[in-house]
Length: 500
Image (tube, rainbow, N blue to C red; front, side, top):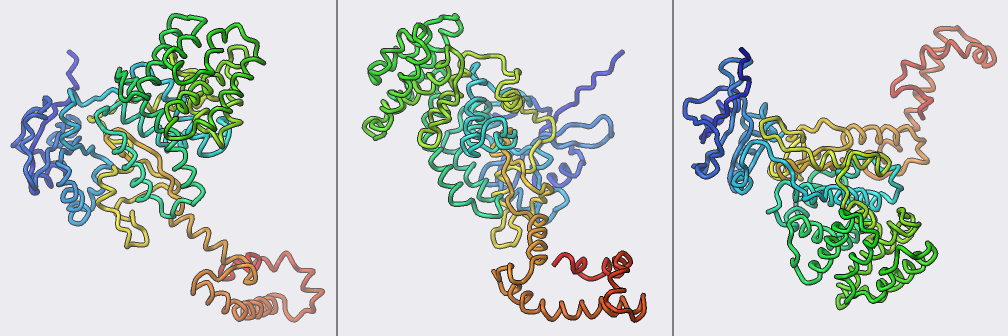
């Protein structure tokens, strides 16, 4: 008879003493079986809910899975363990943390993202943003760059927690990057991100509304949603006149699209001519008064980039205008995924399947988190007054960390200056001649002033060492024994004179 290996899940409302025991692996008698207890949390100030499993492999051990805390109690919860029980901190590196607003919509400990068959379109939008930010071709974009984008954070949040507002996701994205980056974002990079956000926001709103089946988020967004719905329906039906279906909702705003009625019969040169005319109209439409017309033109331009070359994608058309009109590239990558359900092909040079895999990955609350820590805990434990503001979070990565902006929404954040890389940079600066090392702080100025005296002492030491080993020789005989000189030189302080 095969033994049922499914663990029993328990729920306990724990005070400080009970919480210490549970998080240390000691079960408590005051518990009930977990069966979606969200309506009966019973949480009071100074308590936290704990979902834990009885570990069969280690009898008598409680394995905490999920901590439940009101938002106003997160500071007490995370701060207490960072100070009094630091061996368990950060908590969110090994245990999920949820607030009641997320728990109330859970029906199990596994949450599967839902994208209404738009995962391919979201994937394209994410890759477009990564390419636009890096200003590189897709072949040179890495997965970590995609997982660091705003579009990924928004798409993943929408798939798991559609009730979270867009502004909340963007706020956490900005604050999470500010907390984790030990060097400020470059002015150029910051301005590019700001510009790109204003360009992509209409696309995020349209995709969110499209996924939820809302046709009238606003008048302007509703028109764009209707256009994409018509395009998807035409592609499902394999209708060769899909362009005419796309423009039905857009016709009142974009008179130039009338030529798209017969797009399938036009030569590539004519399609390119239409694309150029639509792009030319974008300049005059870039005002608040013509915002709807501007968004419609950008959508049409993006669509034309996917079909201009005889029905095959010509994304280079959009990329040629990426500096001034990044939304054209974004629409092109998005529209290319409308109606596509197979996301495991080698699209986008093999990057598409990797991004889609992360988007569609279920959130398993019965397994340890796959992040370094959660944003909520980092917000509490980060201390900007320290040299290393994130010291309490025990970061073990040199280049980037994975932060859960929301449960299951893990984004990659680059750490631009870690203690390791900073040390290497300082050593490199010391290894340069004094004449080329700028004195950027008092210690550097002191080192530059002291170096000539140290250099004289080191030269005397080298000559003395040579005399002790070889006896009194002239310069020519000394040079003839160059290979043997490497012995004493390798033991010099600071790694030897060749570094300077």
